[in-house]
Amino acid sequence: MPDFPRHCPFSRNLHSQYSLLDGQASISALMKKARANGMPAVALTDHGNISGAFNFVAEANK
Image 1: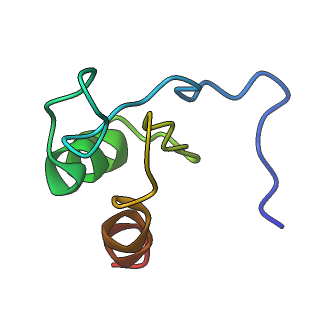
Image 2 (image 1 turned 45 degrees about the vertical axis):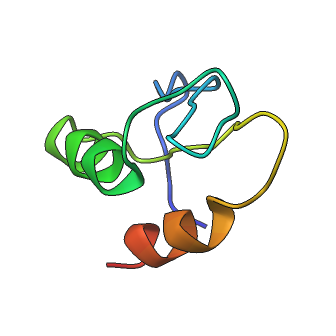
């Protein structure tokens, strides 16, 4: 497990284009932004389905 700082900032409320009636951001754009901002952790919290999970894992492993 990586050694994260004690107060590690990461989004705990992140909705992608797969989140029903709540999100519009593409997962690839979200992951690029997270990497650019040096975020060590990202969580996907879409509503109503888990359709974005496969794309999210694929992008996270790049």
